[in-house]
Amino acid sequence: MASLIATILVIASLVIGGGGVTVAAAQFSLPDQPLYEIKLASENARLALAQGEPLQQAELSFQFTLRRLSEIQAMLQRGQMPAEALLQRAQQQLDLALQRAANLPPEQANQLLERIQNRLQEMLQTHFQLPDPANPTAQQLMNRVREMVQERLQLLNECAGDPQQLRLRLQTQTQERQNAPAPGNPSPGSGGNPTPGNGG
Image 1 (cartoon, rainbow, N blue to C red):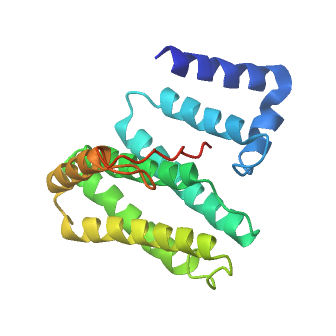
Image 2 (cartoon, one colour; image 1 turned 90 degrees about the vertical axis):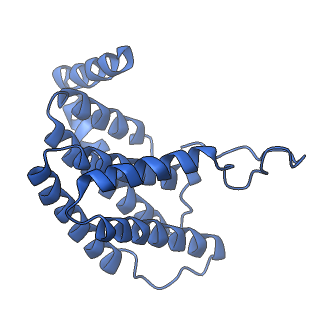
């Protein structure tokens, strides 16, 4: 709670102190650029200000998911390799958006989930149907993004009209991921040394 208040105060001081232009400029920044942390802080502030407004929080969470996916695409187009943390953040924000949408009253939930499904399908067909990058590592990451989006679309199809079932499925998937070894890390007891994760 204290961190949320601190974030709001930082953003407010930037705006009041004439830093509103900086905050606005940060919205177009990518993870490898100096203003990116301000972009994330402003997103956290918007979510905090929407406290007590579940529909707005769900919509913001999905809006920020689309930002993460667009950032991945933009970096790949520029020949840059996004950090593993960016893909993880996109996945976490998408699952949070779905969870928040599924927690809404049934009519609101179904309407928002349908919009999310349509937007993800559109993004999959437009943003991530570019020629495969020459860099095999970048190609692998793009394939992982496609798979992540396709998995969520399949989940939305299977739980269409049943937000409660979607909530249960998301909770199960989250628990399974938390119990699974991190990518590149050995499973417990395998005797290997863990690989340090990427920040970002």
